[in-house]
Length: 243
Image 1 (cartoon, rainbow, N blue to C red):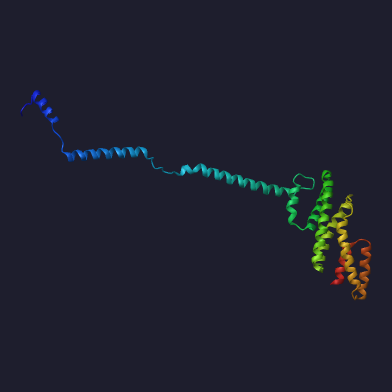
Image 2: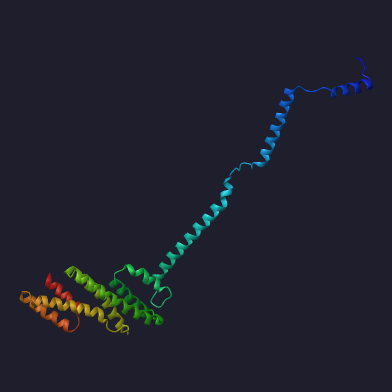
């Protein structure tokens, strides 16, 4: 193999500077370089596509779970308060809640509930509840009398009167029990006035009717009970005549 001297190598390198590439090759190389630079710049300027993970939804899900727990606790608290309020008496802190719950009941039933409260209060000697309980009972009797007047005005048949008498007598039984315990809650004029008008109306109707001798004797007894203000007893006997 021929040995290349240093002078020959220098001369060959100098000759390389004079070599020029073909025009087509130069254009192709330039195009490739420019395309590579454009792709690099686009990759830098364009944000990377985000890949969602289920972990990113966990904070929102956790908040919804906390909200559901809070709502469930609130419902549980409300139900618990209403449940506990059913055992309260007039004068207790939660009694107004019990009164709200009773708004769906018949006023006559509410009046009976108040009479039951009174009996329990007296038996348990809850003196601090006594005065509020008497006030609540009297107020409930006013509402019961109004409702009874409306009901009898719309429908005064024997069945309606029978139901009314049964409800009134339950209340009166509690009143008598209170009297034996030494508590006189006074007269319940509103309800008595309604019953008195009803008895008077029935007596007038019977007086205009044709009665048997037995019915006439019963009418005399009914009138006597009316004079003695025993209105519910008088109504019971009126129902027996009308059967």
